[in-house]
Length: 433
Image (cartoon, rainbow, N blue to C red):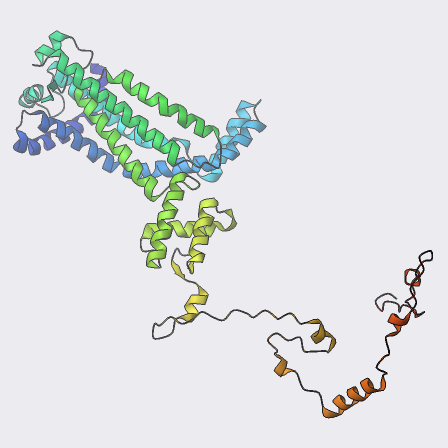
């Protein structure tokens, strides 16, 4: 244990110094020997560490989404080189290099805070054994051994015996109850965080092995926390419970405001964004403009939710621009006068009216919108000629087709042999030469 403590001495000293500084502040409010002063010092240490790890958390989000995007290509490589593991690994590394993706980036926050976890563990273990470590001197050590959180000392564990617990000034029942409750809360928060990621922030249009791995981790991590938690001191349980709650809240914020494309969270976000943009007539936040810019840049590669968003903007008379801004459509923009008064929209193109049979035979104009008053009237000479032609015909005369005899019941009609009734030959079609 001393060897391990010496390996982490470069980090135990800064961690103990930060705890002491927070303790000096909270000690003036709650008292230097209270569990609130030491417990809040550990919570403040966690918050400080997680704030410093926010850039790594952003890299983790980008790496996770990049890995989700590459899953179809990775699956093809696995199927193509399933009998050649070495070639499969080479092609995987080539794919990572071409896409600029690092699989280890998704583990950066966990790896980065691991040294702080081990350092805090050794600091609390030194308090339990009565050993000074880092900047914690004899007086601070005695104050920390007196601190209790709901009746459980900071350095007590679930597996400790009654003699050791009594030496810290507490009862075994209080220690077991407090540590059990904290372990359950720690495992539950870890499970909810992973489940929230799987049910809301995963692209449901692509089924990949990555999703199966995430489902497995959703159940494995809580079990691991429960198994190892019984060997952690109360102070370390406070550390892990705080960091799990921070991770859960941080992930909820990311899922709500920057969801994964194709996920249920994106559908809910675009629905809220549609209501917000149509209500105000523009995108007001920088994050909203970034999302809209990415959707416009996809073009035909948009998913179902993104297409619904664009269609909703179009129905509202809005157009999404390539720079992420939203402006009014051309039809409505032209209808706004210089005084700011919105006039009627531009007139739609009028479809040509269908002419009657009499109009087509008489040679009426076919232009759209031509009324009967636009047709030129016949001259008087033309009207007289037409009336004379009609008067020359006998009133009882009938057309030649009507005077032709009917075909007999046993004979075939001449119309079927290519001739008209009355002996007239059917003219050939001018289109056939």
